[in-house]
Amino acid sequence: MTAQTDIAVHRPGPRAWLALIRAETKSVVRDTAGLLIPIGLPLLILVMNGLGASTEELPGLDGLTALDVYVIPIVIAIVVATIGVVNMPSFLAYYRRTGVLRRLAVTPAHPAMVLAAQVVTSIVQTTVGIVLALTVAMLAFGANPPRNPGMALGVVVLAALAMYAVGVFIAAIAPTGNAAVAIGLVLFFGMGATGGMFGPVVNLPDVVARVGEVLPFGAVTAAVGDAWAGQTPEPLHLISLVAAIVLSGLGAARFFRWE
Image 1 (cartoon, helix red, strand yellow):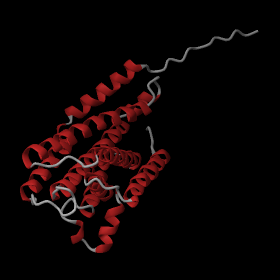
Image 2: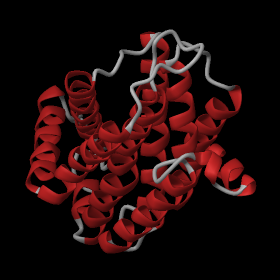
Image 3: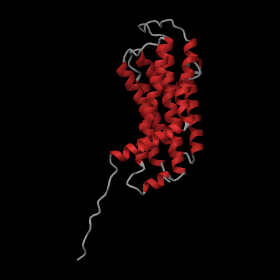
């Protein structure tokens, strides 16, 4: 009769999770360009638009100005897009290329922990970038807070999830870190150009404007603008963000490779 020996399986505890999150945070802080762009670029766009934006109240919006309902949503969209679509996939692709994910796969620390740590780190970056931009907007340009803060916060959370999902999909299909950055930048500027980052959407050809409206960047700016004005965002924009989460998530699950 053969004696059976039970081998205890040790799962990573809270200390392991915290250690991995600290390691991811240090990696992000050391990446100076990746840290400054999501914070510096939105501030630059905010200041340029804030200096030129009219302080005249928009009709029917209870004292809100163009800065509140047009510029601030674009700034928020830039923060979440640069972090989710550009930064996150470059880190994950680099980890794959250097074998970090493969080595983690043979330890109790499942590689999925890296994704969770990246999301936590990205949430912290997003929060810092948005809070800093709103502080400058209110103190320097007299911006107004959202008329419906709960709705605005919910839309921003949905927007961040959509951009993070797109970023994980890019990481899934990009063979290298440089390729991930290239794909992310092309997608970021493409979505931004059709979503109002370089000028009013009404100046774009109608077909381009309609396409940009359903892409994540355009959907974010429109939905955040509606929430800032105290209005319920249009279902099309919310559905577009949910679709980005679902489709990108399914694509990432299908194509993501740990090695």
